[in-house]
Length: 268
Image (cartoon, one colour):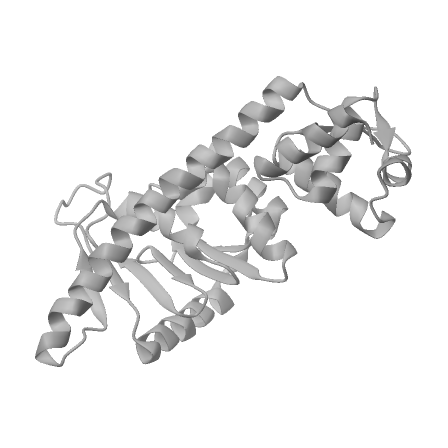
């Protein structure tokens, strides 16, 4: 390994890449393109890992795949690669700031209520319901159960595509039941197809009555009805549920809704 390669790999690891990913990107940056087996041999990345490594680099916008048999891979401009990695860090920092705010809000509520010997199992959260529920998905590590109604704001979150891939590639599951109104908008259908391609299992039905995010079978967020009768109005405040029995009931309700819904791929 040359000193330049060694520095580049260390720099990429500092920016968040794994050792294998940084090694693969640096090697590709010095080649016009390479097939996966050739890259594995050149970098000493195990062949059984090289496709996952390349898939991760593609997801992060650092590598492009060239069609053909066999397929070849090429590195994007290092300036663009560095910018993409920095965006991920900025997005992560923004999410951490939200998590920190939520942590303080939740623990302070517990701290205050503990003095009366009572801990509520639900909390009404007055912040924007749409924004709150969209970022809540980022907490998930193993599973996400979700229901979605208009205005389907969560479908505009490009970062969620990568998160779905991370959860499902790690053996987790992401399931979502969309309200059937989704099918009337080709743009929303196309976005939902991206999530499905990333590993999300989706179904549609007109019976979706509220928005819900249930993560890791531990906690759930549900929207409360809006006081605004206008159907185009944003959802109302959000209710957080962390009582184990209530969460289990919500999961059972989701499974019943799921069983009655139509697979998204068939409906679309």
